Image (cartoon, rainbow, N blue to C red):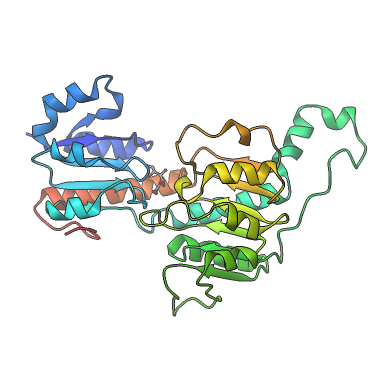
Length: 317
Ligand code: 8YV
């Protein structure tokens, strides 16, 4: 009999789904209307869980899966899994570190360019026919340059470093903050987030949200200032969203490029009607390349754990 796997989030790569189906009986919880009843029926047989970084898994659900041998996070964020709880139960938790780095960094740069060069407003201006109606060169306001602007990176892990590498190619001076200075990073370390924000034009969030919630608040946005942009490709909960809305409405900062939000997919409507904000639907890793590599890592984690081995890169065992 094939082992039973519980899948909490869809996987968008057909070949990965085919392999999963060939090896396991896959219980797609995200397709069930009555999830509670479904778990009551199948929970006892589940040996592996696949979830998304943002979705994670609750301790309540873990407790309802007594035969669970592995939680494979199809993402790099583990903030939605209680790692200490999983560790206390001896359940390995894996993530797809390294698989999505390039794409998340690419999107960060894309958001930086989009927001300061007002690419979305320009796109709308042409497609709506407004350029033809109003061909005056001043019909759209002048935008701002990215090249050479000071970039402050919050979280100098794999993604932060990949953003730094790309921003350096735009001749942007880089500084960063993290829990500690990193000896192998050539850029200046700024211990305190307020000082980092005060000294940069783009504040780019690439940090894990396990410990850092609400760190970007009104004071940090004030320090970033009226020519500054906030970019977030990490987690919405790093930001006090109501403070961000107020800062944008009040012209406290110049703009924001956001891929992640506190309560996805519920984005504060106040962010919709301003050209100073460019929004994405949590898509930084949503490429065929990243999602294929992520899916392969998930498959490997399941295979290793269910063969009785410690999965490579387990965070808890
Ligand atoms: C994914 C993410 O969108 O890596 C993460 O932590 O949030 C994203 O890459 C998500 O995990 C897809 O399942």
